Amino acid sequence: MCHVDEAVLMEVQSSLRLFGGARALCERVMREAVELGASQVGRGPTALAALAFARTVPGTRPTRGPAAHSWAERLDTLPLGALTAAALHEPLLARLGCRTLGQLRALPRTGLARRCGAALLEALDQAYGVRPERWDWLRLPEVFDTRLELPGRVEEAGALMFGARRLVLQMCGWLAARHAGVRHFVLGWRHDFHRPGTDDAGELVVRTAEITRQPEHLCRLLGELLSRVQLDGPVGELSLRADTVEPLAPHSAALALEAGAAAPRDGESLAQLVERLTARLGAERVVRPQLVSDHRPESMQHWRAAATGEAPRPLPAGALPSPLPGWLLCCPEPLAVRRDLPQHGGALQLLAGPHRVDAGWWEVEAGPGAVARDYYIAADQRGSLLWIYRERVSAAADAGAAGWFLHGVFG
Image 1 (cartoon, helix red, strand yellow):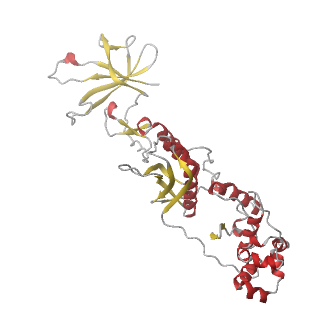
Image 2 (tube, rainbow, N blue to C red):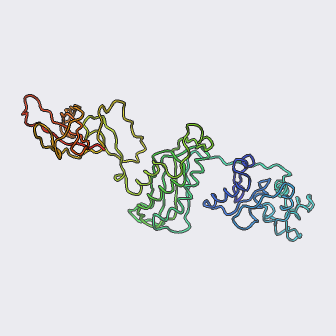
């Protein structure tokens, strides 16, 4: 890929079969490049011929590629302005009665070189494939840092997505060429004013839980974050910077249905959904449990922000020697005792236990403190399974201080 005048040149001959043919590839390029400012796509056997076709065919549909035996004839019919080197001498050539590239080729080469220079003949020969073309191919920068001047002053942060989307698409193309993805990038903006004591620029850091280069997901996430931003004034320029990238292997659809492989899924992944909800609702409202090495049920997990980028830690094997209920009460509920049996809508039947928990002795002030309990699985009169425990007391303590408590419900 390289720049040729106002166009971008791509050599795609070896990729035509991969993308379903030349026309399918042209339509895809036009569909995806229009958001980056492209207005026309042309193709031809040479770079300058493709550029000439793109310049002279109106509209935004890709120009039909000429057949191998007729493309030179179609090139002959194009005006002089289709070739940059000829457009520079168009007034002189018009006085000679020359209006098209075909008429230009018919002029004596010696006189043409004397009046217009050898560069015109060289460009003409390259366009028709008589001489080989040589271009300086683009080299990707190590860091993506691009600026975009907005066509007008933007006063609301949500309206910045028009220009921000174009920058995100450029970044994703840069990432795809590097076979990489990002975990975070920075969108910056500059105001069209300067007030003493105020900053004339701002920025928004976008973080993702997993490495990605999916433009639609990044744009949705960025849009949610921008909707919560208040601008200090009108914005006239945007910038986007991605300093750190990580390798990201592309998904291979051809191997997705092999034996043992899961079929490809449409839509957002769970991590992308969590990121979008976090951006919309706030990190403090989207949380997930985090396992803690503690035998006390009320201290076995903590709640933390879901979009932290850290994978949940798996539960160690054998960490739960007894079944735990699906519902845990915030505060244990005292149970009445009759004839030494705990009551909850009637006498409870002890099915399993005891499971002894004796922990928390190391805590002095923070946390629930020391506990000494014997847990049981019990059934009530309706057949519901309950998780209850009995306080244990030392031999020196008052035996009547021990009691039964409901702590959880199964099911």
